[in-house]
Image 1 (cartoon, chains in turn orange, green):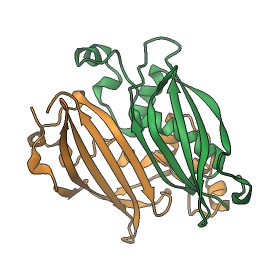
Image 2 (cartoon, chains in turn green, purple; image 1 turned 180 degrees about the vertical axis):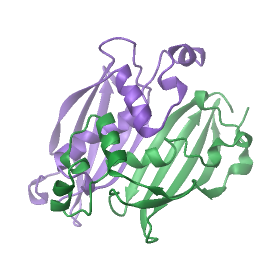
Image 3 (cartoon, helix red, strand yellow; image 1 turned 180 degrees about the horizontal axis):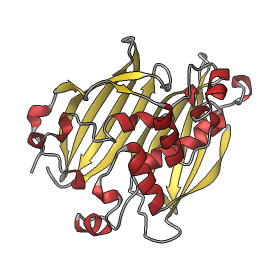
Image 4 (tube, helix red, strand yellow; image 1 turned 30 degrees about the horizontal axis):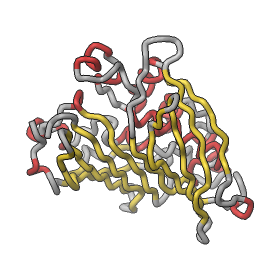
Length: 149
Length: 139
């Protein structure tokens, strides 16, 4: 069944602001097998000029779509069946790196839903701002909903 | 970190192999919060037309990104990173899993101190990422 086109342009925060901890970053870095000391060693991160340990470039997925997000893309009315979903594209653009101690607000919007053959493509844009209201990153995610067009 | 002045368009980052096994997928599911069933349940994965369990696209992306962050030394220097997922990485239930081979090349160099690194990520002969690029700010 096709995705609900009424969701195009829908925009909403993803839950409450999320605090990024050293533990979150350490776990994520371990899961991708990356032993870069800037992910785990606060002194090393501070020596490199950061307030605290740095998050890997793709870390924010854990606060957005990767974690299910708790956002409106989970609403049954959208009609997204995750077993039929594969990832199409993903892009992160940073104003600055994410560091432990950030309290981030994520706002998601569905930019588009289009049919491509038997599949549908949905583009989801997540804007990330910090506790000072400064923009931190934009995440652009395109998912493929297989066979639902 | 490579010095901006010493990096040229065409500078290569040598290929590296990464094993992605079922336990890596489980670990990534936990850390990322992505518990989509196609990444851990072979029965369901096959029932929806996939050859087997597939790796999280974001795990493939993160793994390929290590080639850039290791090269740069400082992952905070990555200004942007984007990929297209061209085919799924199928992870059999064995001790080998899938072998992801990733290499990079500097494709552009800009006056603002950034370089664009293009990444190639293959499993066997098949490209699993297309248009994978990271913009990195060097000193």
